[in-house]
Length: 284
Image (cartoon, rainbow, N blue to C red):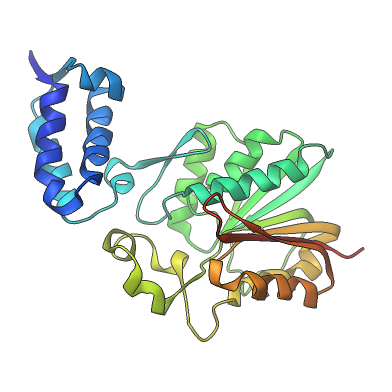
């Protein structure tokens, strides 16, 4: 049997990727060692040993090469945490972000005191929003739609693994004809302008799904406009829409709500103080 030192492995990975990642190299190296060893960061730093198989060195070399290619660590390991649960991710799905956890919390706080409710998540990706809402709102009937069949495969797997009851279906928001009404619609749609690519990290631009990220500069609010228009047929009177947004367009998205006679429209900031969420209630 072959045993490997967690601390030595951590230092090897960190030192190889540090020229590219700088201080971030420690965190990335720790993620990999945690994954391959099963130990916590504390156990790794006190230098526990773990048994390795014949392909272990190949696996580590592959991980280091992927990091040097600036592939996201979540895609390398095939998983990401969201709202205290682990979700499978791949290049068909966006990597869940902390801001989206805040969006989910807004919806949970809004619905937790209500009785039977129905929720539609538009653009599910990994299914992290819909699955988390289903797990935390047992009184809710949760549906999730996405145009991507490959993303839906991942979303279904995640919901099944976490034992969340979600009805996923494939549909294009620009051709979707609602067959039922919902009490809440939630969406984190594409909202990054094409012109903003040059300011973004290569690991995002080169690996995360383009269709889930970017919108044309000449119509950056197209998804918000379409979803709000959809609310005529898909949202109950007194129902609410919750959006995650590009911080640049907070007032503009809020205005879209007001133009369609939504009440109690709120533009909310994220934990970093940036305009990140807009929500409002459809007039009765």
